[in-house]
Length: 499
Image (cartoon, rainbow, N blue to C red):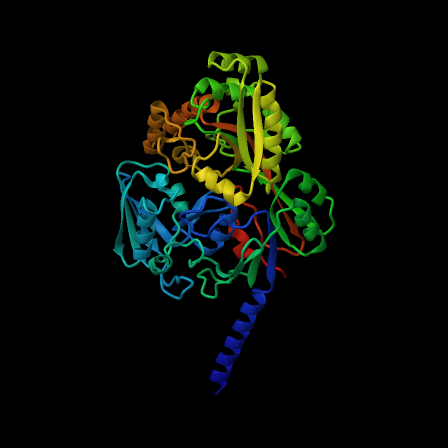
């Protein structure tokens, strides 16, 4: 009897401890609503903020930008570098209660690579020949040739359940993963509510009972809500708001070098952007230092194709001649290309991220100095995403995400036919270098390849790289355990608590 009472008491205490550990709902304010929830299809930061809490991959990235185990506990690489074998965690459950096995990993990989899916992640895995379930909890990936960024790219392979995809056609409006939180409620353009996954495999996590992503487009409203305690976390804060919040009692502002960059994208399938001289002229017309001061208040650095946070890979911008602004040089290049009087065009952008909208306005003024009359069209975010996907633009201003490996920045964006090459850019010499960069195992040789690539792309590529900002996150002082990620990921919400 005493033993039974003791066991019951232990069970009661354990249940109480879990309930106490999962105290409260974290009120998060974000600038945009998710544009779909399918991890294999979405491209917007607003979608990944939610998706990354629901789904997981075999490996993940920590705050130090190191690869770490996730759904896989370990992996081995064959001596020839062409085979990666992963041992999976046993007993991991999807949110629908079914156990995850190696068959789910294989299905998830095949889904990304299926052209019918239209996944922007597909180009990350072009060098993978196949994925096989070599045991109930073991998966082996066979490569066509050595593939240096394979592990870092694998962070983009989320494991999804086949039956849910088949029942719904895709995962844009439903979400069933293995992550620390599961989808509870979506009120379009208002909020997304996630609740704790009671079967999560990490002991004691998540520590929150729920996360509510409140859609609050106005930066001033988000900041006001944080000051009053209506919201407890703002994942991304523009520099102007950050400076104000730093002076607010009860609020902490975190900052780290962003892996994402602001950019002016050019559609090379449309004139005059098909001419590399015009693209180079635009680079000379852009004064990045002016944008850093006017838009970021100095909390950014002029940026090339790879973030300076990747110190072993990024070429200094001083090595790019076109990063020294010159109205005369820009006008001469435009004249050489047949546009002595400049031309008229349109920049599409969106208004919910202040740095993006402000950058578009400054660029408009800078381009005018060399005779380029650029109208700025501020679109609703969902429309902007569709126009971006469909290459329905002359020019656009936006943000692009980063990666822990240079291949993640460059390959799918610049390779001919790449899954995010919305610029319709094609250059055989660039294609060759991109291929060499991902198939060369030697680090020093890879560095030389990416040095060359950055110098080729910086001035005449389809992207005018603008700046890498300081990523600011603001939170109430009662939010504990949260760590900021240079990737903009919110991985550490699983460790966050509201004591």
